[in-house]
Image 1 (cartoon, rainbow, N blue to C red):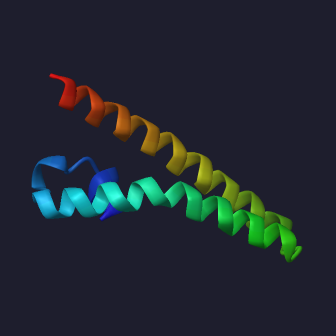
Image 2 (image 1 turned 180 degrees about the vertical axis):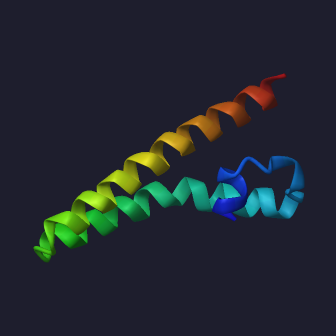
Length: 76
């Protein structure tokens, strides 16, 4: 679902898929934060942590953009 969204195929999403995607995107950031926390507490390889944090930042940025676009669309 995230791949459909990130590839900007919004027009191909059904209302049910859109609802599921909204749910996933709203929770993805928290899950990524938890992943980084677990990796840090277990002292896993630093390179893996950096990759996870990069992914976390990318997802956070995209989620913020998506949510602001959806808020703008709802306000029209």
